[in-house]
Image (cartoon, rainbow, N blue to C red; front, side):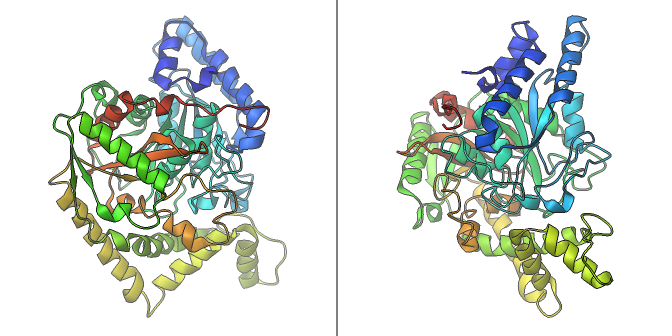
Length: 491
């Protein structure tokens, strides 16, 4: 196993006691990227020189006995939707190709304060719109487990980077499952925090009432460690909640006494792959063996979640992306005759097909005569979905379900069928609509070797309980220890 495939907590200990240096660890990650990312496609930008400089500086400070941050010397990859002042931020789009921001996102500031080594920016579906990372303008990301399969999306690059051993930790964003689903497809841990737990300042917006930043790691302890660094109040984000950040990592060894797990029968109906069903049921049996009470719950409005989400999210995207017109922001075409044509041609040339589709869906839903029938009704349904979860969490501690209906799909399988791509989000989008925390943890493999994840959801701002419940399963299994094996540029 290469150094970068060790869990983050192990690497932090090795760095602290002098078994390795940050420069050695960074060089090991960069070597893996050089050798294998041509096949995986996890990175849009690799910050080799600045990463080495940061690692050398941290090593000098450590040798001098200076105080260091929580992630001192640990390489971390960042999704290309978070603005970073010394690295390009493209959002996977030609619209922002070549743009280097003048400031850092709040979460990037927190990483720098923690003395993390920012190793590069990861690939993503354009403006976070997609479930496979095939909508990136710069090529797809593949799961390191099977290079003919997608890594999931929209944070596929971050998930693949951790899975492949390019970085022990990565940051992604989740608007409808964009952390949890790629974590499942790549066999790593991915956590979507409660809405408001992590600042969105400097996160390029897709759907502002749904977007949330969160961690990827090899294990639950790594996700807890990174969440502690990222979480906390930020006055620059009006939706950031001023609540204390628990010591997530210190609480993991304490199981949840009398853990009550809810399962919704609707999550196990037609369309669920038998191997995914088997993996989830096996995980539930593990929890039963640990003394957990598994009981059925009702989420009566969850069947409307996909329709609700694909009205709310595109409507907000239509508004957020209006600024990219070739004048205020974004690429400007030289092929135009007048102002209106310049707007049209600039957006038409720089936006990809899926982004255009969602802008048009949102613009239609917000238009005069249709607002009440579509957007307003979707917001009312959203409230009913939130109420369903509030009632469920009066009886259970966490809700368990599949992450996605299938393991990672083949490249190209969903790109020509957007409806099927949207339906692939059926298990994850409700958490975003309700503002809840959710985690995907490794729970097995298909017969042909594709990872399968288990999703756990908890009530808002109970990430501590969610992580402890996830750690209970992880201690009883070794799925999180498995790593893909590369053979040249194949795995």
